[in-house]
Image (cartoon, rainbow, N blue to C red):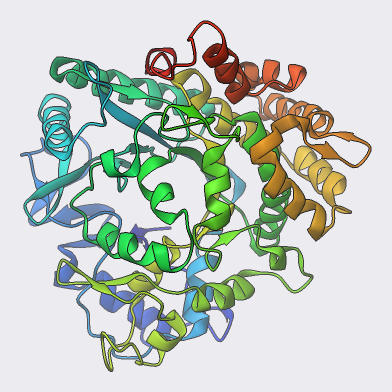
Length: 519
């Protein structure tokens, strides 16, 4: 399926059914064609060739001439005046368009890390980040992503490097077929980053929460959407700014073949997300001292903005499907609309109102599918649905664990036997039990009491299902779980190992963690 700026082009839906009419006969299809062929997007598609500004972007067809991508990422933008209002069916169809046959399923891994000055351990500032991004672009042939005069990211093929609000450095990996490719991509990225960073005295730390510095010490990135979020967060929770500026995560994005397949994976992912949080718990320090949590990052999400986060109990309702997720997302308060390279503050307003032209900040204007795509990126549950599913429950960690998280979820969700076993195992878990795990795991990890034993015992069974699933895939990927096997067998999380070092040979100082978890 061809995709342009995240828009689906082929599979559209009319009145909730797959569209079988020509584009001339189907309003939804016509809207897609108008967006696809708009000059404002800067490129068109035809004969399998992708062009931008007269330059062929196909690999091998031309050498990059250090093009500047003058648009913020992610938001996608189109300046098309919609000839027909979007309908709820269009929004549902957008999610449906993510369905792919199993042979086209891919693995997309994203990981964040803290950059710091090696000499002082202070967070790297924007000027250092800009030097780093420019250096990577020039040395390794990445395209630059600009917001106004500021470089805010890089893109190369289907990979991108972006900045989180406090300068956390994120790689959004390309969709790949195997975990071997995922790990190769991670290693290549870290090699490139280190090659430039070491020359300017910058190191990178793999941990879930900034261990040493206060909020006031964290630089603010020059990205318009983050300014809107920073001002809005204190209105809806006490820890939102901590989430923005002091957390790092690793997540994996996975495909589904149908609405039913999405539902099954969504439920399995939500039920087991606290187990992933426990296995990868790696954020026990705040401002130089233990904070009382094994995953401070996970705890922070419990009081960031409950309108857009959490365990989504409605996913377990018999009526759940794409339409129900759309209904939920329509009422999640908006952050912004992106127009003319600028963010327009829409905090607290609903996409449902936008669909009716009732946004006070954009009176009478109607949304496009790009606006819908952007809105979906501002929803932060433990598992997030876009045109794929994102597993969001794990702390950031050192490079040796980055390949383990996608291995964990691929083994569970991409193998039918393991997936069904997970669903059978968790089918009688109650909403109260799932919420209990979500609340207690950040504190007690795998030692969290659950039913007749500890969560560790459930994790042992789950890890075996993940290994079995990977082995059945036939790519010899089970070895990527080695880094978490000891965690599950002993019940001792990475955070607890850090705390033992802190109280032992580190002499109650967190400074050594910058060496211990250095990339």
